[in-house]
Length: 452
Image (cartoon, rainbow, N blue to C red; front, top):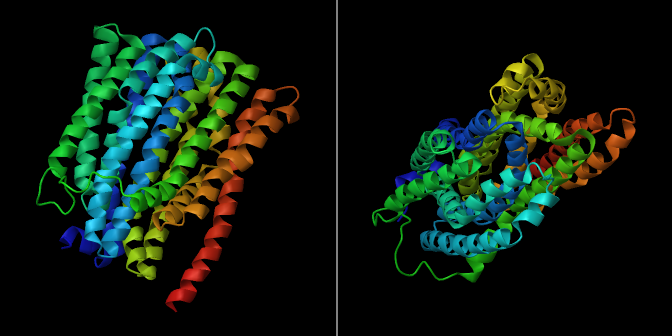
């Protein structure tokens, strides 16, 4: 039988629902971004600019690991919301078991492959002789905990879709708190450097997974662990993987882009340019995570109402989310253009790095006003199971636009090619937002014809 938590997605006012589901997700995602922020701040001040460059090199590899987690987690969460909207409660329960099994399989595979070819991968991602040791030490620990990371993110997605955004938020907040407490202890007190930062992250996720299991072991929950849900269901597995393919490909494409950007930055600006890119990414990442929190709050509302054929409520949820996301990314634009130096100083006290980061930060952020809309639109198509359109949108910025621009624009800045690399990002943001707007316009016309 459905719970009140499930039913409210189709009956309560959309605005209050979005606030109820998005706020815990925003808090959780913002807190989650502190994993990277805390590591960067402690490493930047405790280990120096070269360690920050090493962390920048390791970041795309971490994103690849996360991509496999999102392949399962996002697809499963979308299926749970749709099944609940269709009142298919047994199917929703089987999704939970499949999340665990698939994450263990994929997590183990990524861990083994990553450990076997760690140094060649990091070299390909832009590591130099000076930064390789930092990137290697950090990623080795992260990979040993990769299965745990996959389970943590997968179960958090399911918690939100089954009507427990506050539980999801609590697990993330606990993980972040533990991580921030352990970071200075491991890095400074125990002298573990970047390995200490990675170990703090894995231990914090272990604590979060333990809290998630408390919820899913409760037989009174609509979705809980029990016999009969652990066998992989081919239909559920394939459908979840197809739906999750959009964020998966988006993350993989992002990693490919970062690899190309890293190598272009190293080619034209050296390790200092890599450190600059790392600082800019950490700054924008906080606000991007807020938008991702909005998306996660929107996802169960849109998915449920799409399954229940309540299209007006579905579109209303999208519109509210897009407006909020635009405000959030507009804040990035203002801060980066008005006080970039203050933002950089949060991550480093190295004056050369601070000076080198100011102009690039202003360039990268100049199109941020439209980035939020593009992110929400891609997630909207994912939330209603339109995987093909979501995949295409996820690839427009990362592959179709950004990679060619990253390779060609430096040639247009003959006397200062590094500026061409920086301008690649706002130009691709603009083109991908225009593409998203066109696709959305066509889809909304179809929906309006349906419910007229």
